[in-house]
Length: 346
Ligand code: FAQ
Image (cartoon, rainbow, N blue to C red; front, top):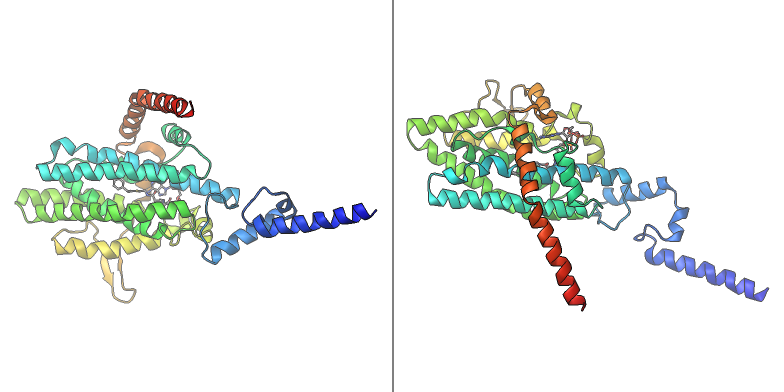
């Protein structure tokens, strides 16, 4: 009897100690079974609301994990597919300096893709599976990379407008609730700033050039402006994921808010180098202290994100070919790592 009494109290004390020590951090310890799913979600939301950062080993709702995988893998794919339109101009850059800048930029984008794939892997999906989702059309990538780069001025437009839009979006993501994603964004934004400036400088240079060069710059502006606005996603009333992502502070601002911020920042830059924004309805609204702008062609956006943009097929074929041709490199690297680990173990 005495033995049973002592055993009972010892067990209670041990359980309590375990809860105090690891109850918050170890999702699978026995005691957390007693906490209901609702309580866990409420505690998770409390952490988000109080500005805490969620790390890979923390408990998180399954839906939060899946939403992050969807959004982050889409982002990683965008960086990698985004190398294609610019890569197209590396051999045709007009000078050695321009070629070096473009090469560095395209390499940076590859690095961004790798950071974000690695950050996404912390959520329990591996890179091969993500790539497979891209190649089978299950995962999306940014609409913007389904447009062609027809002239050298397009390289300036991508740097200035596309990287410019990406920075607006990513500066907000650098403060998002998921630690690995926010940290990846901090590093990426620094490089995107260089990309943005080189693109603007390229266009400014053309605008100081001949009439043909100015027309080429304006033509690039006309073709890239609207697709750049679409990068921010559908309007808020049509964005099924925004509410949830904003509640979890993955997104800190809505699609329309960031789009407006981009327009307000970019219009004066265009004016400063003599480029015209291809929008007859664009007008400064003194009362709102923002630019009003014309209607975005959402039919075009929907066609592009469902695989029917000008270059969707070309981009996916190029990605699948690169993956297939790189298979032997991956196999060789795996075999090398295996042999090396055997030597180290011996
Ligand atoms: N393209 O409910 P929402 C770059 C889809 S990086 C394609 O509003 P959400 C750097 C969306 O996935 C550019 N699909 O979605 C660079 C969803 O479909 P799903 C990439 C889009 O997630 C520069 C559906 O529409 N950046 O450029 C697009 O709340 C130069 C409903 O939309 C990022 O990925 C789109 N534009 O908001 C690289 C940033 N917009 O998945 C190389 C991270 C929406 O349910 C060269 N992502 N959709 O089937 C985000 O901030 C968000 O995911 C949004 C979309 C804002 C893109």
